[in-house]
Length: 194
Image 1 (cartoon, rainbow, N blue to C red):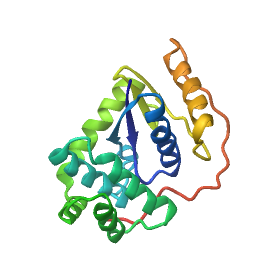
Image 2 (cartoon, rainbow, N blue to C red):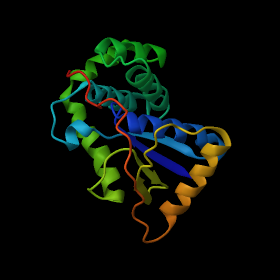
Image 3 (cartoon, rainbow, N blue to C red):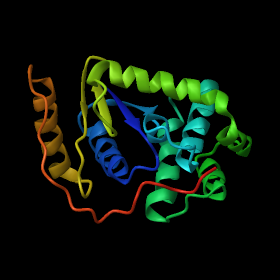
């Protein structure tokens, strides 16, 4: 199975779900592809550091393909969500920790990468529809869903059990939504402007 996981690095909910997907992928023989989705673009907001990070992701992808994107998102997400560092210096440190050239930092201010981000977003929305946000998961290019959104990322057997249930729901024809209110204990996804 292939999972295209669409992420905005500034979204704390997406970060948690991404850690769950990364935990499960090797245990369920899932090929995980990390794809850009900008909440700044979706919500017509000025570019933030999160969008700058996605511009870097697209520049790295153009040169190296899928290979380093998971490492880069892990390093960016660690800085954004665990170390609360949403600065350009944090992005530079993430590039270094991911083993990538520091020169990619210049892409954070390069608006030409926004077209690539929009193309990635169009791929996601073509499967799940317009009325969604991230995280978005698309299975084998055909079955998609927005979510799941979770307070913490499960691990081990709990992560695999949740995966099996979510995938079963996603594949059920005519299934659209399961939702309940969530606590607002997480910080706002807004980070520093570029």
